[in-house]
Image (cartoon, rainbow, N blue to C red):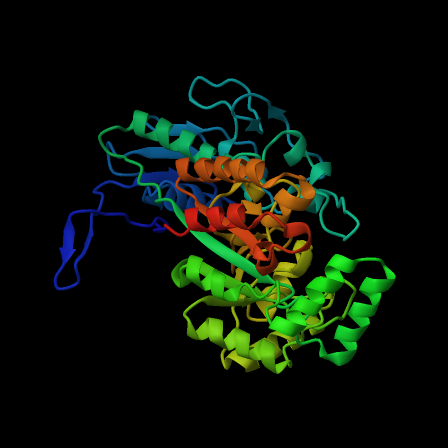
Amino acid sequence: MNLNGKWAGSGLQLAGMGVSFAIMATPLYVSAPPGTPRVSYTLDLVLSDLLGMPYQLLSPGDHPPEGAPWMVYGVPPQPGAFTLPWGGLLGETHIRQDPPAYWPGNLVKLFPQPPDTRCIVDFDLLSGVFYLVTDYEKYQVQHLDAHERYDLKAYPSDEWHLDHVPLVHRYAQLLGEVLVSRFPQQLEMRPPAFSAEITIDVDFPWKYRHKGPAGWGGGLLRDMVRLKPGVALERLQTLLTRRDPHDTFALLQEVCPPERTRFFFLVSGRKTPYDSRFPWTKAPYQKLIRQLGAAGYGLGIHPSYSTMTDPGQLARELSGLSSVLDQAVRHSRQHFLRYRLPETPRQLLEAGIRDDYSWCRYHEGGFPAGMARPFHWFDLRRNRVTTLKIHPAQLMDRSLQAYLGLEPEPALERFRQLLDCTRTVGGTFSMIFHNDSLSESGEWRGWRPAILAMMEALSV
């Protein structure tokens, strides 16, 4: 037998360490087709990570101890075992070209199966999980927007509202309830507790300062030519007071606890019109990065616009930021949330990145891949799990202000809805902020109280 489950516990104390845990006497035994990485990956995610239910994957021909809880998936039904419907997706190595069948309803069911009295659920629940968590649909067809990001509104996940809720968690909950009702004396669910994290992208650390005389003077001239006296006045005030609107880092340190907060730095300089003017070589930028690191904040890189298709540029930016920090950088979020599957995650892995934060439904918020917790990326083309951990974000400040066009109060309500939904499934609520969303400048004028309220809600 292969032990694939994670053992949960309570009650047993490790002497001198104050650590308590329990070892459940009986794991769930699972029979499944041998040598199927898709099956083991999905079982680990659902049973171990989301339900906290230990399990053992049986070798072919093996049976569990008499009376032990037993689930059969993808192999002939067995007396005394709970049979989970099998649709075949997890036994394949290729990528299907057609979207899955589905049944709409309060709980959308992917991969529905013919009625079977031996099965309590009527759809291939594990295939549904795998389809969602791997972003399977984006391997089938590429719908791209003006920035060559995935056009999320063009996919079934949006049409069928699959990513509007943490559907993978709900599938796991359904399976857990069915298993516990079938084996009430032997199984229990121990789902993870709710947590929250604040992530902050530093695209433009300063709006006016540290651009040099030419940059400052040219900007002032453009303001006057374009008849923007308010912006020109703000620029002059910055020159006189040395207080830059985007320099909100002192306020961020007051509100955001270091143990829950990570900054991502765009360090390329202006390689494209969508990048900033602040490369990692600028001394004030280096000072800011080191100060935040010394204060205990998590740090990561914000790879520039072109890195999605240019791994060499990614390597150069990582080298630069690593030299500033005098340590390797392992956390990343793509600028403009631009990534391509499977190329971008592979490039990140090759560059030494171990945690990626680029998955977000940038147009309105929600649950990328149906997930509300970090999970390991599965390389669908190579049909194997990787060491890259994906941290899905449920919301971004610019989603509220720019994409949805909300005012601060309705934006705060949208934030609370997603926060509450994440809390109900024991997820990790992760939100993308930008340092300039606290600036009270430009499009962010009037937003500071709402942004602070969101940060404070994630800090307790």
